[in-house]
Image (tube, rainbow, N blue to C red; front, side, top):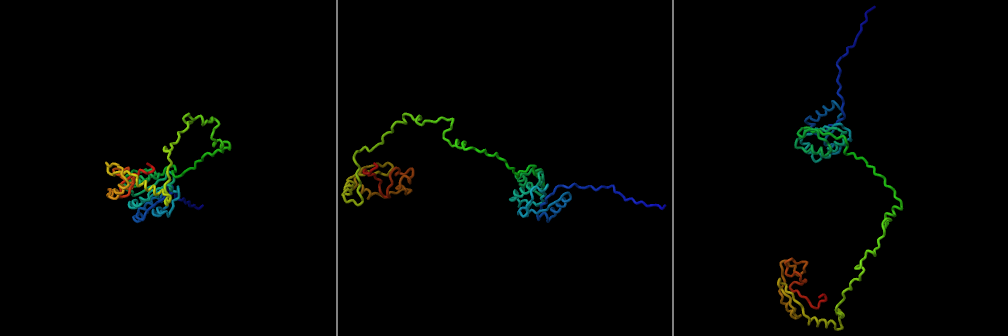
Length: 302
């Protein structure tokens, strides 16, 4: 019997350690970090343990790319300090996009931030929980487990239907349990007393009719004669001025020789509505510039 060769395959005792896979990540860079190699190094480090989606910052800011909600367990942003300074006006919008794209308890990593940057406060206002120290060059924030942007509808109770009798009772003036009020019982003796008689004209003499514009009965001449014989009261416009009674002829002479009335404001002759508090003409009727104030005894309202 010929010898038989038996071959045994060598077995290696070494075992290859497998790195556990993590949730999908989003890597965001800028032309500045892509040029100096920081963005490529970030993507290479993340791809060793998870699926990585790569985006540029300008496409997200310009809304050319819309991030899917609750799609990433972590978002890693590699920007230069100059990129962060230019991003301040749109920072609130960008952080709201990151918060919506992260899953609950997902993390946001911002690299190359400065200590005086307002990013930490903006993260808190946007709903993130800041986990890193304020002086750290990389800010790490986490999305809370609850979803602040998700609103749940509130079911309101259905309105009960009311019958026609209930609607009619709602608009009735008298309720069944309230006795009616007698309005006459509320009146007193003074309320029932007769009001005072109106004051009538004391003089029993009838008022004379005024002459027409084109009077031919002689009433206009009679009124002109009465006006000529009547007297007027002249009021001195000075602060201590007095009133005196003069005839019509004297009135015409005073008006002709009266100096022109002047004032600092030039509005004294218009009336009390246009006069100042210290005006000497205060309380006097309006007059024409250059004439004295006068009151005719024949006026009906005196």
